Amino acid sequence: DTEVTQTPKHLVMGMTNKKSLKCEQHMGHRAMYWYKQKAKKPPELMFVYSYEKLSINESVPSRFSPECPNSSLLNLHLHALQPEDSALYLCASRPEGLREQFFGPGTRLTVL
Amino acid sequence: TQLLEQSPQFLSIQEGENLTVYCNSSSVFSSLQWYRQEPGEGPVLLVTVVTGGEVKKLKRLTFQFGDARKDSSLHITAAQPGDTGLYLCAGANSGNTPLVFGKGTRLSVIA
Image (cartoon, rainbow over all chains, first blue to last red; front, side, top):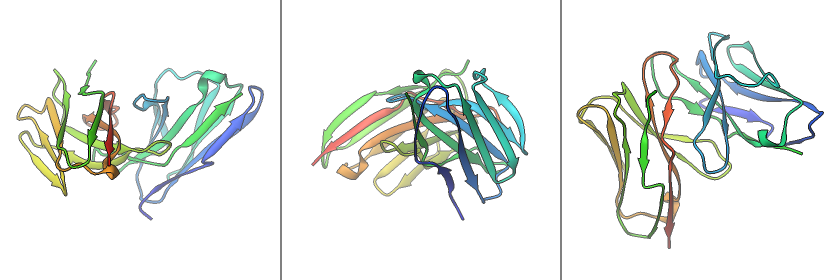
């Protein structure tokens, strides 16, 4: 298995909803990332996990809550989001010792 | 703060033309990646360049890393409509330090 998968592909939620985004990879990568990408902009880093521990939080609001239950899974829990949080949310993973990141296809999130 | 200036921001060309995209910084990076992203999809890694002066070819795409490892270029020969997309350069340093992304070049190749 040589890819990063993300579910769901699309998500529409209200501002009072609680939802979760899921990311999975079975390449043995121990660094995993969440990015947010707005239209016509490059990806913006949100969180970095290294060996299942949160190592970087780029001052992300607490309405976004990441979780890394094991070395293959990365979740992003969403609660009380705002319409401006609508974006493409990308997960990526990185092999040990290398610098490339491999991205999943993303979840297109719309907050109404 | 490290920055990567990518140019041009937009490029619309006819099929068969050549083009070059530039990625420049005042900072040194240990490596630089080029990605291509299609609408609604995640970026796909095209190449990583590591050594100053390195040149890598991927079919009609030629990537170069500057001697001082501060800049890079992507040259496409005889562009095809399938080359259409957002091209992103990203500079990397060691460990988990975040990738530094350029703002991207949106390429449209018209048949």
